[in-house]
Image 1 (tube, rainbow, N blue to C red):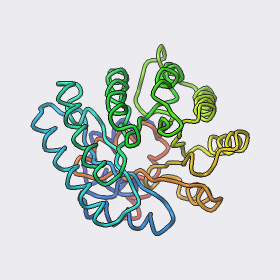
Image 2: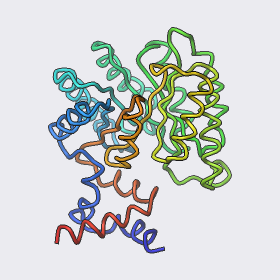
Image 3: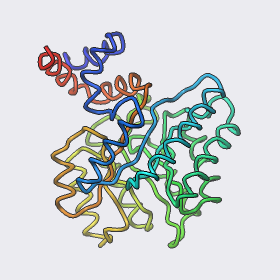
Image 4: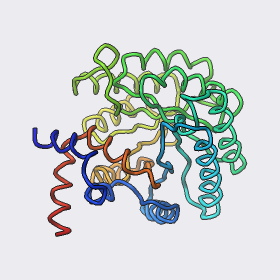
Amino acid sequence: MFNKLISYLLPFMPKKLVWLFSRKYIAGETLNDAVRVCHELNHSGMMVTIDLLGEFITSLDEATAYKNQYFEIIDRIEAEHINGNYSLKPTMFGLLIDEEACYRNIREIVVKAVSFNNFVRVDMEDSQCTDREIQLFRRLKLEFPKHVGLVFQAYMKRTLQDIKDLQDLHTSDNPLNFRLCKGIYVEPAAIAYKKHDEINDHFLGDLEYIFQKGNYPGIATHDKALVDGAYKLISQYQVPLKNYEFQMLYGVTPELRKSIVDAGHRLRVYVPFGKDWFGYSTRRLKENPKMASHIIKAIFVQG
């Protein structure tokens, strides 16, 4: 109860206090911070995906500004020879304002990434965005079959059917590329599973289907039970190392992360950065209220 109370009070706390918690999970506010963290992770044998924080904008001018920042990010990451790709949230580019403008903005970012033979992941947001983001991915996948991926959330009751519905885009040369995670947004029970074991069962069921169809999964979890379940499926279907990867958030479960790499599996770390870190941090805590203990520890360490 204490942890949940902290998680709900956090958005009303001073930002300096919240940063004591956030700095462990966010690379920093600047691109220089992100580049530094990406190099550190690469040197530890891990790939990265870079995410500029920001979402649910209110004007298309903001979308243009974010698009230009992504151009700068791509130029810098490629110049630094970082082993990484890019993740983005469509609401950052106007999805809920003008879907066509959003598509054009993201398409320009994909074109920029493709010029370096790199890859862009379209993040999945809350349920009001699901249909729009699947359609956005479908359009991009048809034009850039090797260079775009999508995220699915296992707690959504529709997820397995959505994965099935996209199989017409899959070929052996250009497999569908999905990041599969549990899900972070607060959704009603009518459309989302709520129980831990139930979500885990559907996560592994979705992952098994992805392996059966020869899609490429980013297995995004910090739950050891799911990591162990993924290991069993990889063995059962004899999936080559090059046909999957594990994914984790920056700063979360570093010991489990290291064990996956030490076992010889590929792993990619999601590296968020930017000035809009506050919303990301408060959402992260609501997803996992147990993290509240880190805030208390940080306060005393800093004191």
